[in-house]
Amino acid sequence: MVLHDALPLIPFPAAVIRGEGSVPLTSVRVEGEADTAGLLRSDLSARLGAGSVTADGDTRILLAIDPGVVRTEGYLLEASDEGIRITGHDAAGLFHGTRTLLQLLHRDDAGWSVPQVRIDDAPRFAYRGVMLDVARHFFSVADVQRFIDRAAALKFNHLHLHLTDDQGWRIEIDAWPQLTGAGAGGDATGGPGGFYTKDDYRAIVAYAAARHVTVVPEIDLPGHTHAIGLGYPDLVEQPVITAANIAEAAALHQSLPVHGEQYSAWGVGHSSVRIHEERTYDLIRDVLDELAALTPGPYLHIGGDECLGTSAADFALFFERAGRLAADTGKTPVAWHEAGVVDGLPAGMIGQYWGSAVPQGDHAAHARRFVERGGALVLSPSDRAYLDMKPRADHPHGLAWAGIVPLRTAYDWDPAQVIPDVPAEAILGIEAPLWTESVSTLAEADGLVFPRIAAQAEIGWSPATGPERSWESFRTRVAQSIPAWEASGIAVDRAALDDDADPAPNADPALTSTTASEENA
Image (cartoon, rainbow, N blue to C red):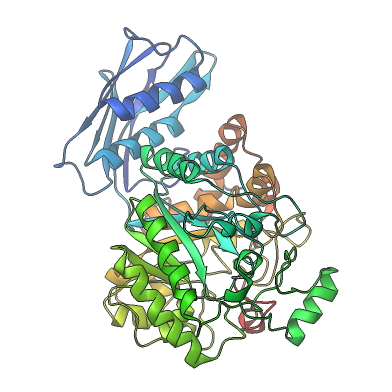
C-alpha cells in the first residue's frame, strides 16, 4: 500500500494547512452555538471518556456561525495553541465542521489530541444523499437513526427513505388504514414486516434535522405496488408475469406474485395500480398530502421505475396526474429517470438517474428531459453508487445485476461526466442507495455499506481534483478511519481494502437492460 501523509479525513476538505504541533484534549469545554455544542459534547464524551468534557475544561472549543465564512454548508476549522474554533457559514456548516473535528481525534501514549491545523471547507454538490430501502426489509426507528448517524458523520445531507414496494407498505396513512394493515405484514424473505406510525416518522425526521439531514420520502408508483393490493385489491392490477420473472423465481427458489397475497420474493416489474380507476387517484392524493404534511423537506419522491407491464400510454397518463398531485402538495416532485419520457411532468421536477456510469440505451435521454424542463438531476449510477451491489463475488450479501462493485470502482466516477450535454449546474448532486433484498439487519447493511459509502461521500463533497483526490490517498485514509468506525459499532468490510486492481469496466449493457430481473430494484 502506498503511504500518504494526509490527515485521516473523509471526505477530504477543500483546503488544509497543517501546523507543527497538536492540541491536547485531556479535558475540554465546548462553548458557542447551543444545538451543535450539545451534540458535540455528547460525541466527545463518548470518544474521550467520562469526565473529559466539563464546563471548565483546559482546552476551549468555540463554535460560531458567520455567513462571511466560505459558502453554504461550509466551515473554517482552526486548531492552535489558543484552542479550537469552528466557524460555520450556517448551522449546517458548523455541524459539518464538528464532524471533521471528530475525525481528527488521535490517541497516543500522551492521551487524546488533534493536530494543529487550519481547514477551509465547503461541499462540491448541494445534494449528497443516501437511500435506505425499508420496504423490502423493515428497519426500526432506532436503526434508521443509527443509519443517519453513519451518513451525517460523512457529511451526507439527505436520507431517501424507500417507504413502499411490492413487499410492504411502511408509512401510516389515516385515510387508508389497510395500507399498514394487511399491506405491512411481511417482507422480502417471509419476515414479520412492520411500519412507521406518524409519530415514528416524525421522530426520524426530527433526528435527521438535528444533524442537518433532510428526509426525502418515496412512494413508488405506479409499479412496485403489489402491497397496496393486500389491503385494497380493487386498486391493483393482476400481476404481469414475464418469462424473466419465471426464470428469476426458479433460479432463486422463490414464489411468483399472487394478487392479494403477501409477496415475499425479489422479482420486479410485475405490479401496477389500476391506472384507469378514479379511486386510485383518491388514494394517491391522500397519501401524498398526508406524507407531505409530515415532511418539512422540499422533496417528495414518487418512483416511476420498472413499470414493465404498463403500456407507454398508460404510464404517461398516470405520471402526468401523479406528478401534478405531488406538485400540488407544495413539494418538488422527484422521480426515477424513466419518468423523463413523459411530456406532461411538472416543470422543475427532479430526476434520479440509476443507469450505469456510461449510459446505455435511452437512459441519458430520459435523464436530460428533466433538465430541459427546468429541473435537475441526482446521480446514482448503479455500477458505482449502489451500495447493495456485491463488492466481490463471494460477499455473503448483496446482488450483482449491475456488476461487482469493489471499493476502487465505487470511487472511480465523476458526476459531471455521466450524462452528456447536461450543464454542471443541473447536477444537483449524488445519492448512494441501499436496496435491502439481501439484508435484514443494520450489521448486515454495514457490511455492504462500509467502506464504500465513504467513496460516495468524497465524490459528493470534495473537489474533483486535488492532491488527495486519488485512489491511493483515499484507500490510506479509509484504512486509518476503520478503527474509529469499528469502535462506534460499525461492522466494516475490511476485505474491501485488498482491492488494488484497475477500476472495473462498466457493467455489461445486458445487465442494465430493461428486464424484470436485471434493473433497478
